[in-house]
Length: 423
Ligand code: AMP
Image (cartoon, rainbow, N blue to C red; front, side):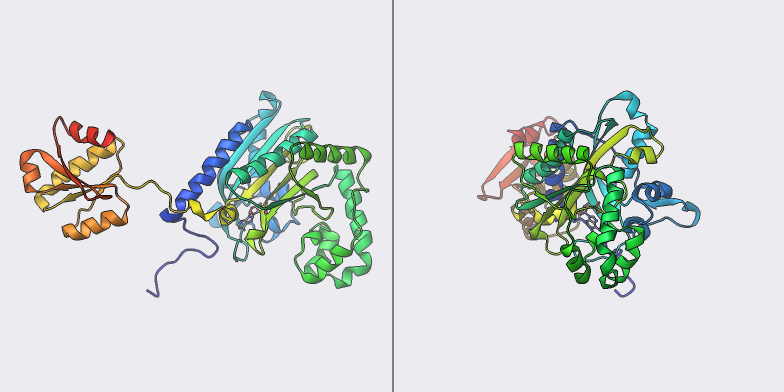
């Protein structure tokens, strides 16, 4: 049909055949998060647009090019491109800093970015994320715990072969020193950068390190970077994070060019990639953001760290053996004629209320085609109801596996039948 309405580009239906894998992923993520003491928080899918502009930085791509702002009379709002800003907003608004010394939150939900859709890059996608927020809560062990949590979720989902890269941006002063160092090293080569990066040179030099253009990557590779520009304290902090990761036997690589595109990061940043994903190989990322709460109007001393994992990409990297593992339906009721339907309807309804999964077709269909459907649905049994059954107070239960049949009495408001299925 040429005039039919189709799904917006960069979005996807999650079909019933795929949902079991989503459930497994969500179940495992929740289980691990709760083991680590994180509690779920749910914030709205849209927020005041200034929340994102202020937190993510007006020079970031997410705000500059990808923010999906609502228009007309809903102006001033934008769909959330990520979870952290909303959670910090909620933390401040609900005065969590007065209630507890460290708040550990996790979230699972849809995020929205108006990017050019391609494989692994959607306009609506889903993230699983965690945030640990609290007054003067920075501690290298907490940073290591956060990284361990992300790795453990991947492990619980059966995802193998992930690569963890870490770096430290240090304090805001260290970050400034780093940006000057970068400008100094890049100054002689700006003409070789792509057009975007030539603009980034002044506005947000860190973004050049993330550029995917071949020419820029070559220049970035030639830079001589280390963690020398960090203050002694920041270096010590970073060393302690690494030591803790070694203690936990978590493999990592230190990547001096890893900076993350968003303004709010300080100290530890990390990224997890997986070669199984192809060109969009980032599974997730995170880091410490000690200035964000204060920048959004919270107390000066509230510090935080978090991460987000992309669910669509996790599902691509998950083993496929978990596909199509939804529970088989227990029974299909087949009424042989229209007169048998009311009894069949009552039976299927009663069984469902008793926790036994069942279904029944209401359209006129031959016994043969109903049997075929039961087979296709993976039903364990069918319940046959014809005139003889109806008149004599029983039903015929046929086991699909071996074709054996049994007459099961229908008495005591179907209790006999419910008992039969429960035994
Ligand atoms: P980010 O905050 O951009 O680092 O995103 C964290 C993770 O979310 C990424 O590593 C991806 O797994 C996932 N992600 C981000 N943007 C998209 C997108 N447009 N489509 C699908 N997944 C995404």
